[in-house]
Image (cartoon, rainbow, N blue to C red; front, side, top):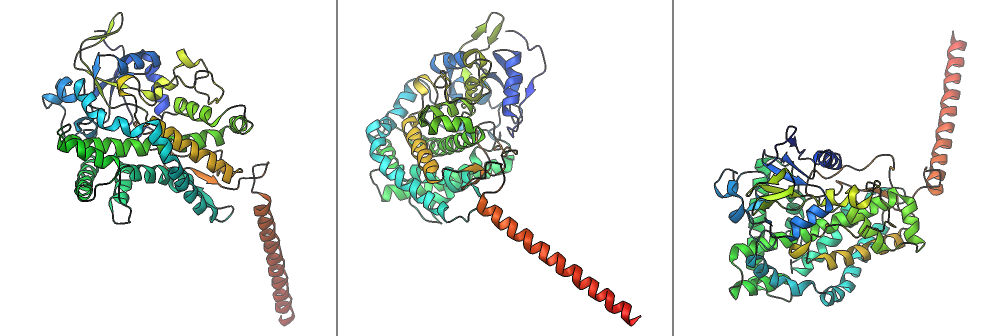
Length: 456
């Protein structure tokens, strides 16, 4: 195995400069050893074609219990802040026949027919969220992630899995828990508390669903468990996977696409003029800003020769970087860092995985995002970033790629970048009022001075 020519790169758990770090890793080679949060070392893979090879081929596994000696032997503590990404036993972390067994109960749930049947309900959910935004006073800044990009997928995925509504029910609890689930800068204590909260919430939810079965995916998973296809822990962990991934990635897809289009008005114009489609915009967004920046860890089932002189030893963990693959200059050219809805290679990305582990929820996520985007820009055609000069803060994560908040003006700005005419009128009136007040104050001061002079 080739030795590292330089010290290990320590990955910033906040993801503040994620793409800068990816560029530095890419410059060192196709596979580079890095130090993940918590001091765990892994090989980071940035190239698109190598990512595809390792995603689809038999050389790697996602089952730490079979193929990561450091996990099996206890060298990696179960209290590692990212341990829940390794410890769960679901269809994403399964290997070989176990993967096929766990994936089968879900396959029928995400067919085109099922997704098409769900679209009218998705439209209702989107319209209701937009109706609420109609009541926002003109000129008021709105956090579009919190007010639109997040609640829409959350409600869709909760209905898909039969999660009952209510402020004190599991919907509200899951929303809170999932928002912390992808925080890779979280403290050990908070990570453990969140995991306990998650398993407690899902235990109560499964008890409820066993008492109230319905035509939803949770009931289907329970039926698979009762038939002996999956175990109790696998039932729980598959729910964790589907509820978190089905929510967070779609939120980020909507958030990132809106931000990219508003940051590049020329690209938005291409879509609005019909020279590009909303699907083009979504595919380019998936390439440019992968909603999930990386996969869960993979492990070398055998020694993997990357190139002459560079071999990943059997049992070593790997990071498949979806974000790195999307901006691979060898595939997407020297302008891979540029958002371009007309890019001919936009669809060549691995943001929904690749091979046998490709994401089952892709059809639903794309349908949701398309309905959300078309409806949003139709309802608010002047939508604009609240402050184009200040990029929104990124999520504290090396896994989830989105923004802490997406501040926008629903009714836009005038062509000069200032307030819209209605707002400007209000500003002028305020200025005139202030001038009158200042004049009155000056006059009053002069009168007092004259009176004092007369007394003297």
